[in-house]
Image (cartoon, rainbow, N blue to C red):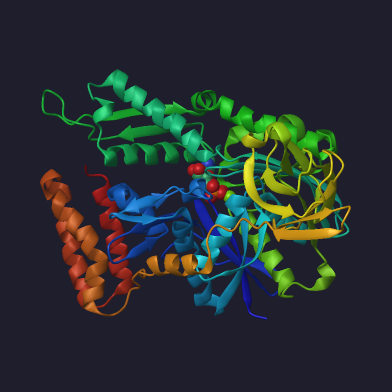
Length: 569
Ligand code: ADP
Ligand code: MG
């Protein structure tokens, strides 16, 4: 069997892992990653696509051609326009997946399948969009699994003999997920998942950003409305760095230079201290929102807080001190943060992949069950929603309900399937429909149809209907199919401009550095003499390095130059 990889396709960062000698390991590559973590950022130039670490830098100098947080758009039809070309969210995600796939292939050879993770509360359309992204990237999706379940699988593999009730608290960059599950005799039994797709580290950054802008407004004559896009990006970046700093320090310095020129012709700078206490006050409500969701998850799981044995902290934002402080109140010493918060999800996905291709021995026998994230049902009269499979029911599952005709001589029934928790059909999400006809003409309420939903672990819903009086049957696979094969083919062509690899052709090396050099030239006028001198010397060093075909040196110098340029506005 070929290679299968596990992928955590995150809002902010993405990771890829595989099974080596029975253990999951992360595959990183310093070209695209910080450590083993690849920023989920894509820059699309006319003839080149840049992914990961370098794209994240481009966000600061070229925000108009750089896309981040595309995961928040998955499942929508919102177009992303770059250089007058339109991209679907799936295509941008596909670019990231393709890079992860290729990164893995450099180390382990051909890969054609993947287990990909999604937030537990992604609905079927968002899951379908994720599958499409994989198809566009040329990956067969072995399985879509929920992120917290995945993290718990990694923990489960390490602690296979244990019995434990586990709560997974996963706070990433853009989403929060909470899952309660039980590990016993090698089975990971998911009890309930709840979450918020619009709550993550980014919201904490925003609070600091607003605080900085307010400070600038109050203490300087700078009009914050008129700050350049680049300056705003810089403030964003500063806010995020400050936040991370506060996970280890009690206070941090906020420094923003060159906000403008004052009447005396001096540059306007701000510098002040931000304490952890202030940060905690600014973001108290966000932490509380996660606390409420933790409570809801426990309630739905039927397990009380005091019966929880282990709390797994997952996601970069779970490193915030306020998170563990909040959880300590209820769970104290049960909190485990030794698993790597950034990598656990991808590692768990690799475990799942390893079970599939037998790279993990069957004796370890780890089995996962999951639950239905959303209620599935049909529309009945008066816009009423009739649930068939309820949220938190164990998957896979088969459930039936019987309905009667609503008017005299009714010969056909339109089965309209919806997903969601609202009482009114229109407030839920439409999944699909089909019509069964040939029902014998009778008085209203006299003919019965039985509707059966069969829902599997991959979110595939098979709906069948039987007219009970005649035995006539019809069924349809409700997989949310939004794109056909031809669409996928076209969409994958569009992302085929290849990220340029460093090769030994001078011309290409020039290409790599040409962005920084040309941006540098644009900025010459704004540089002070010291910076100008530095930049000129870096450029001349670069030229020598190119002549010597010293790839590593060129890359390093290019990075340094980009860093310097970022500081100039
Ligand atoms: P996602 O699952 O959304 O891709 P990650 O799990 O990679 O996200 O988490 C990214 C988020 O974690 C970002 O908002 C980042 O700022 C935040 N983060 C990373 N390290 C820290 C830290 N040490 N303290 C606080 N937040 C952090
Ligand atoms: Mg994540």
